[in-house]
Length: 135
Image (cartoon, rainbow, N blue to C red; front, side, top):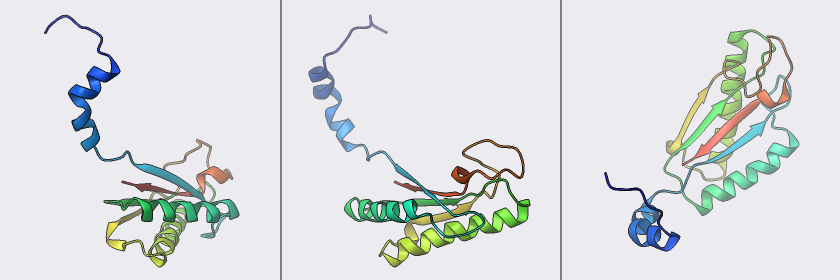
């Protein structure tokens, strides 16, 4: 290899600009929160859902990941079912607004992948969520 050198922004744009412009936009991630022991979105998350739908319609995605989660309260089987319900609720709300279900991958983690690490049987509202990633 040659000796390293610093390129100006204009030189980088001239050399790599076309390739950089051809890259897909970075994924957008949204976190929607739920009421305790429920598949009902919080008031704030219902408002955010409108933004998610608007962004999907403005920039049609290639795929959408919808992943449900719970806090650590309750047993593993119950939390897995609850996180599935949460993910399905969000997918149904997106579909009701015209988002193609074929673009959605719906999964759930139950209490196995907390956003905020806690001990078992701990109420943590930020873990009661669905993560939506739009690519």
